[in-house]
Length: 233
Image (cartoon, rainbow, N blue to C red):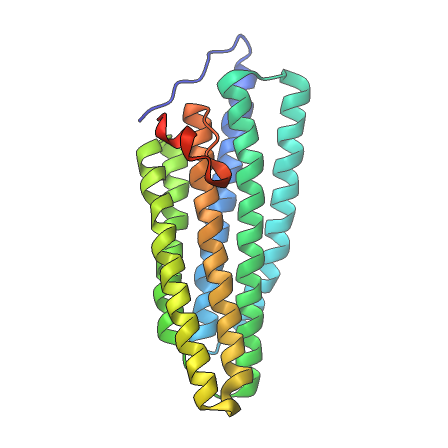
């Protein structure tokens, strides 16, 4: 699906909107890589890579603030309406979700450092890799749907969050059972549980991005379970 924005008398306005979108997608690329490296640092007990993830988090925080300032200036100077305003607002909201994904990746990196210091690989890495692959795909697909203004792709990606939640609950039960069988593993497995929780939250943020694609293209707010708006599409 291709979305056509209103043509503006000011070419600079069009350039401002394209620049805003490009900055957000660049931030999305950084965050996606950060998630991949956080999971890799955990799976490979690579504290050096985990430290890199933590350093990148500061840059992601700065980019979210810069995007927010850029969007605010566009609203103040251009007073956009209709689809233009939806684009600006969607970028603000998506940037906020991307920043929070970065926070979750940083939490995983901290768990990787803690597990490396303990020196014993716990159970749960298979589950982490499985759920990590799913949420990274969701995140990539959500950003791709935004790039193409593709509502169908956004809705398809949004629906994948239910499977991620099911896989998370299954992994949670397995890890709790393992801790009950071997109480000595509790501290190590708790780090794995927190990592799994962060991955589940990343899936939630990818879902939020999909909701913003629908809002941008259709003007329909489907957040917070507003299924009546979804059925109208």
